[in-house]
Amino acid sequence: MRVGQGFDVHRFAAPEEDRPLVLMGCEIPHDCGLAGHSDADVMLHALMDALLGAAGLGDIGQHFPDTDPLYRGADSLKLLERVMAGLLERGFVVVNADVCLIGERPKISPHRERMRDRVAPVLGLEPEDLNVKATTSERLGFTGRGEGLAAMAVVLIERA
Image 1: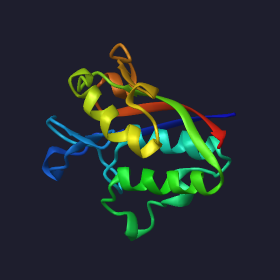
Image 2 (image 1 turned 90 degrees about the vertical axis):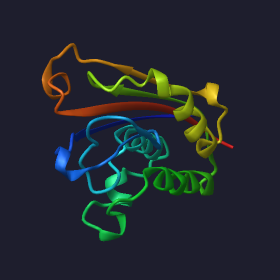
Image 3 (image 1 turned 60 degrees about the horizontal axis):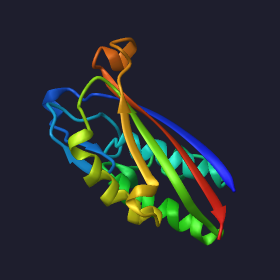
Image 4 (image 1 turned 90 degrees about the horizontal axis):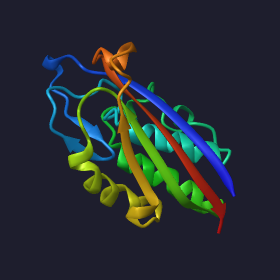
């Protein structure tokens, strides 16, 4: 068994950029999305880094560099599928995962089940083996001021 952790941060895009907010592969109603080269899905980016770390395969910056035009506007759920294909090729399966969003808003509780239902199959998990949660930073720091969002993830993988 191997454990991996991931962390990611994205600032909110300017409203005139008209970007949707995408979290765990789901569009979430919000006044603006996150800025980034891809869809800026901060939660999936943390999850991918945790998976890659657990398998000893580096990080998402190595696999999907933001300098490569191929990944401009990329769907992070599709990138997660590629990460999972790499893990499976090396004989790893996911046992469980825990992903935490850090920010004052939006509230994700109305979207939690949809997020789990969308991402769990990509990981080869039942929804109950993927925990999705959020916390605030008590109005401290950039997340507390509403300038962006952060996410952390922890995964457990094992050789099949």
